[in-house]
Amino acid sequence: MSTVYKLLRSSFAACLMISLLVFLSIVGLRKTGSLESLELGAYDWYIRLRPETSDPNSRIVLIEITELDIQNLGRWPLTDATLAEVLTILTQYQPRSIGMDIYRDISVPPGRKDLDAILTKNNRIITTMKFGNDMEVGIPPPPVLKNTNQVGFSDIIVDPGGIVRRGLLFLDDGETMAYSLALRLVLTYLQDEGVKPQPDEFSPQHIRLGRTTIRPFEPNDGSYISADARGYQFLLDFKDTHGSFPSFSITDLLSGKINPEVIKDKIVLIGVTAEGVKDFFYTPYSHGLQTNQQISGIALHACITSQLVRAGLEGNSYVATANEWFERLWILVLSIMGGVMGLRVRSSWRFSLLAVSILLVLGFTVYYAFLSGWWVPLVPPAIAWLFSAVIVTAYISNREKEQRKLLMQLFSKHVSPEIARTIWQQRHQFLDGGRLRPKKLIATIVFTDLKGFTSMSEKMDPTVLMDWLNTYMESMAQLVIEQGGVVDDYAGDGLKANFGVPFPRTTEAEIRQDAVNAVNCALAMEGEINRLNTLWKEQNLPTGEMRIGIFTGPMVAGSLGSSQRLKYTTIGDTVNIASRLESLDDNDVIKHNYTNNPCRILIGDATLCYLDQQFKTQKVGETVFKGKSEKITVYQVIG
Image (cartoon, rainbow, N blue to C red; front, top):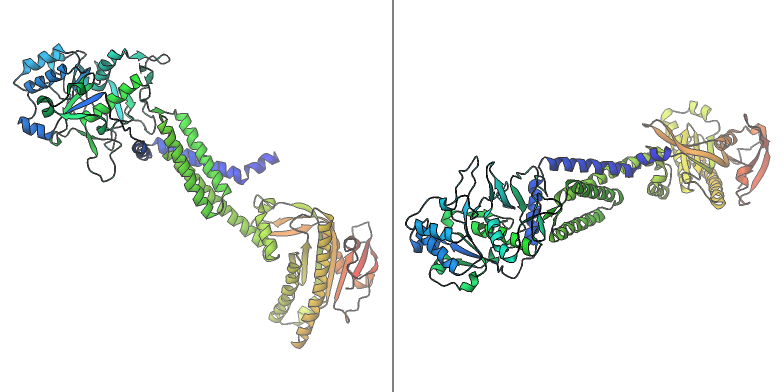
């Protein structure tokens, strides 16, 4: 249980929690449609980045009615006679199918009988109609072809923002199932190749052309959120642009300037490209401030038709989307990756470099998937990754700031800068839930005290007393720090120092060095009190006499107090014995002459055994402290 508790309180657990919250936020934001425009923009961007095919499409030919054609013919709309003449010439050139993207529900005399005759005589001619809706009135097909297989609707799905990204195979008005103009043309073309529409083997409700099953578009496919998915829709790949299709004007056709071999066995689309008619659409290639961002209606129908032909013959024209659970898992993985980066990377320049690198890798990964026919989300995982990284970084930085504040409050004023830096670098060994983790270790404790300080303080002015005492304490504390010790506590005129904390010693050599450092510190204090006494005499201030007790042994080190006011300290029998050695009455063990030396340094036998005779000592006797059964042999350090 303790391991689980520590894990839950760890930085990694916080990282996972933040990453999960970011993931849920992004998924929720995406569910509202707030990211849809950005995601569709990324989809358009990948379409534009995709390498264009260099070979012009050889299956589809466009016969365009331009502004110049209208001026040459002298009228718009074209008469039935002109259309009949155009269709007659085209049928003589033997195309596989002809698509007429011109509404002819109302007769435009003269020539209606001629037009009806050519339409009914050649079943490879496909005419167009338009479904109605709440905003627009429907347009029926030519009356002579009503309820025949020579009619296809020309309705185009335009996304919010005006971009066309989806095509249609079928539409149903509740009474009639209608085919699209592109599908009618493709089915007529593919029948000569022996390819017919079939139900998918595993999903019979899906249509299959050749080797390609075209799964119908769903409202939440790709980056769409609750899109209108009525009819049988599919995503357009736009691998064919307007320049992919050979195009000729209707004037060229009527004047015989078109080689019949260009038309033979092709799909021919007849439509208007004159600017005055306004039959133009925006596609993913429409961006920026460049001119001519729209394509004509027949060019758009040609793109849709070409994609369906490729699906039937080549089996490579389908934009697949991952299911919703995979997309969420994809976002979650990136969110966790961002959180882990925020947890591990502390350097700002490394963070920036890694952030740019990972975003580039993410972009290339999604782009490669797109080239392979898969539409994988880019914007949500990128945002989730970036937000997780930034928030976790901010959280860890703030947590480290608090930890540093805590550690520096406990140690910075009581240890050397080198030890303080090491404590910060190894902070994970010390902190546990806002407190220092308790540690059992072997260390050497030093207690100091001024003899007769109470009676001295009663005779001195308070201000002078505090200045005098602070001078003494600052000098002694600095010596502790210089010798690698930690100042534990100040108590009136007393000072407690620890040698061997906060890092537990693991070898005898380290424990021995701590004991040597403690005694060296005591001897340095002896020299310092002599220097201070000389200074105080010159200032007509009282002089001081020190008592120092030193003992080595096991103890517990950790933080003590409330969360608002913590103190790093050591506790245990070793600490108590060191304190007793400092306060030991001279009459009990030793008669000390303070006239010759104002500093008495007493150590226990446990400390002496670590000194290796590096110091001159004198045995002064044995004593049993209150509450203890074992005798302690006491030694005085002479020099």
